[in-house]
Length: 314
Image (cartoon, rainbow, N blue to C red; front, top):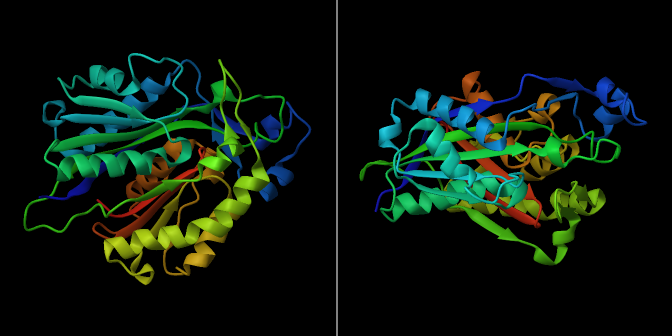
């Protein structure tokens, strides 16, 4: 039984930048209040691009960085909670756009933990021999589900996508994707909602904040333990980009002063399932994390769901 590793990464963001001052033209808020409350300075907002368009753009970049071709890919998995269309799924549309022939193709919806769920699922598929080379994507167009008159939510969200090419490791090669720790708190599922037909995002911010800052650090440590990595060895921590206060709270409890703490939300906002691969791709692109170094990924949010694993940086 072989394991898996991330071979390459890629990301895509729309060209339109919306600053806090732009948001202040829509609702009663200001730049200082938003920075203090959530840590966001700007976010990218899509125009005509669909979730599938952004997912394909990120996947195309990851594939180009991998040295593989579309013919080598046998599985495409997309994590998203903002696809408007029920069928065909986003994964099939991505495969069509990239010319990937006859892959396994499905979407995963666990909202903000989606990429870690999808990566764990792909790792399992590779370990079971059902896949050799896969593309895992997190992509969201949250702007279509944002009430731009609600200052409690419109300051938060952005659009974008991140992708990873994941490949099987050789028999004598250590796995580069550690065991996933995943789960949920379904009795609190109403804390983050996108319900009904063409709805808006709604959330109970304080409920999510308390849960994230008190319950998640021990679960993230479990991911390190299962991977056989001491937290002091981590080169980076890439959590879901929800809120700087949440990120700082979890990082403090992990006690990882040596690790780079990803805070891509400052310039990208909260992009739900896209936030982890988007932030990780940027760290790698800027060469801030050495190849082979251990990185802790941890997603959390709507559901309430959570998932995380330690990966080796490509």
